[in-house]
Length: 244
Image (cartoon, rainbow, N blue to C red; front, side):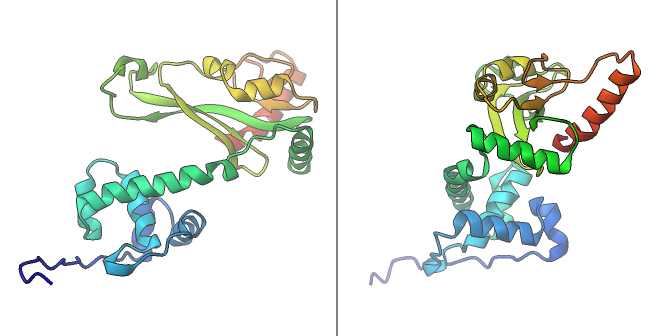
């Protein structure tokens, strides 16, 4: 061994109590442990001061909750900034590889019928498969094509289209559109629309007035003028609220 070789020193890492969890990670301890076991259970390497899976997930969630400076996360966990960067990328890739297991829109006739049956067991609106909506998530101004991300409120965002089933679980999350793009354009270019136009189950999606009504997409009345229309809107709003 080279006597001049520098000895690697591992920093003491902090742990967090239960009160800190929701503030630091936006998840409680039980949720964080589920995420760790589900996405990182293949890697248990701890030799040479390596991060545990739980520490890796905490670093990932901490940076997501406050993505300003990696150096701040580095200080919180007593690791180098480069470790934060590498860990974030590794955990993100691990989640991406399993995303299709959690985000799955019903596409076959059997899957659609099962989803409709589940809806009927919980709600009253007939023939509903799922609900659909878009939401804006604020981002920093991108260096390229930054103006395309300015939404109608003058804020830089990504316009994200999501679908949600009767269990209140997301089945599709489309994050590929800038904030200036209207909900209807995202819908008209989505794979979900193709699936719905070709569906043989005669099922429906519930959307808001940002979408155009179609045989397989229902929206509320903008200005209900009759008792029936008002009753329809009450039922519609009560059931579609799960995606909010």
